[in-house]
Image 1 (cartoon, rainbow, N blue to C red):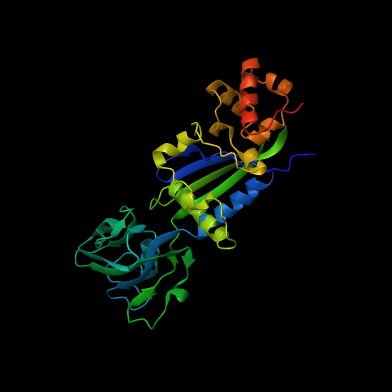
Image 2: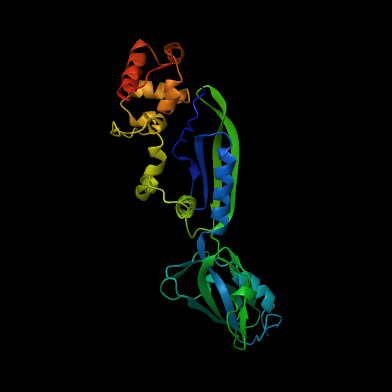
Length: 329
């Protein structure tokens, strides 16, 4: 009878990463799970991560968004579009007000935005407008709030606006782009398992790794609300940034309780049991990552693997015997 156990995938592998872009891989996913997991994470990353954006603007001399300003090169619509490109980091849930007050000929950028404590401009080079005459001036007041995804200005208008207050569409999401790729890979005797690669680009208000971690936690919380999961989800480890890439390669020693049921034993990863480094590397190279993958092999199968000899087979047998299991005859 064919083993019906769904093996667990590898830990997250960092392919490349910087402050704005990150590429991550998960290997050994059950057939079809690459698209299932990739599409779910992509949608959560795009729609469910909080960020800060301008929600309303007041410009001295402009009563509405179709106005023009004396001695200013841009009209109000162009200024609003430029203001929306400013990226903020907001450390409070309360709305904050930032101001621009410039006079004399010159270019106005986000560097000229005066912000209160708890609010930070992340792209000070962002162009806003140009004052064309030394007698000209530009006074702007913007309200910055936290939110999710995209919210139109119609939905943001909760009460009657004062004269001169202009509501703007708010793009709260800190994500610039996210995509995923799925390809087949070999796990044991099967060649239809999935390798998932996620590519994430942020606006700098959070790192790609933070975006992925928050998306995974959001997914777990949503699933846990449906049924009462009594597994070890309460103690999901938070991997520190400096250690994440190394965790994929390191050996994590785990004490296996004798009361663990058969299905859980088959899901146990081989890098959590007492195998020598040589044997562990040889099995990993052959895409054998769990006890379930080992018990589907015979002694002859293992001897055909590079790096596995008689001593290695005896070592594997001893590990399987501790779980009450054995190689195939």
